[in-house]
Length: 172
Image (cartoon, rainbow, N blue to C red; front, side, top):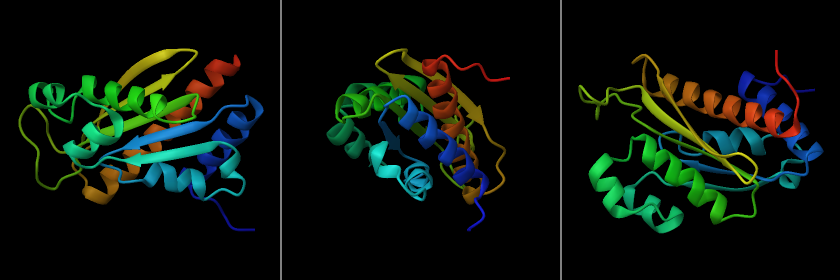
């Protein structure tokens, strides 16, 4: 048996709980470039739960694939709470999923600013049952790969917590 990485261990837990709740999952990823979807689909049987993943790295992709308003991107920038929420809601609307997670951030090493430093990542989770919630994390500028992996891990935690909440299971 292959040993699971931390991402794959939480992905397996998500898939088991989503299957038990008869839920489907969609992802809308920017700075993680599909790492969340890859972690979920690494697990055997993922097709019963994982509906689809949108990799919307460019603003154009966010507009075309998820319906993020161009004015919103222009006014707030891609790395913002409102865009993260619009991405999650767009993924939910444009899929067969019951729950969708979005990730948009600055993985670096360039592209950061005083207001939006490298390592800043916005997340949103949207579900039919609970609406849309936003989360923001600032991962230290420990390198692009580390920021992306940490963001993917945090996104999986958000999905896991949301499924537990929807199922009425309390987490310690």
